[in-house]
Image (cartoon, rainbow, N blue to C red; front, side):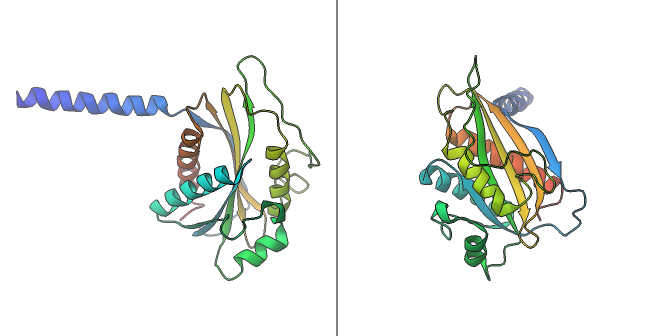
Length: 215
């Protein structure tokens, strides 16, 4: 009987783990890293969520920071020091983080939600349209990128008939203001916004640690 109970317990654990893996649908579709970056791992992160509402921004940043701290990484939400999203630019960010010791910033925003039969394309208003990661691209400069992402998220038509949610997460070096890492991710048929936030956070932190960009 003890052996039977032991085997049953192992089977239950294996089933639970397989269900957990099956429910994890957030995947990277592309990851880019600046191969010239040779600095030590970052240790203090400013988390910036670009969202359509302040509530969504706060929820995202709070959860991301909580998980970073649980991983032993110092982090702070941006909404407490940069509450006015219309004034997030180079000068306002540098003034807000002065003396706080941040060495990197993580910026995340939604890029699209595709309907089952036809994707609903977002309206791009006043943004740089060059694609890529090097000089001249919309990703390259941290402060230019926030304006791009903000316009992208707040001038869209894609908040209905959701099937596949796509996001971009960028990590910027505070000292150089340059892009160091970028990950495009997608999740099929998420149950809720919370589901997206949880899985994205796990995915990003794991990859940044694996690449030794986070301490």
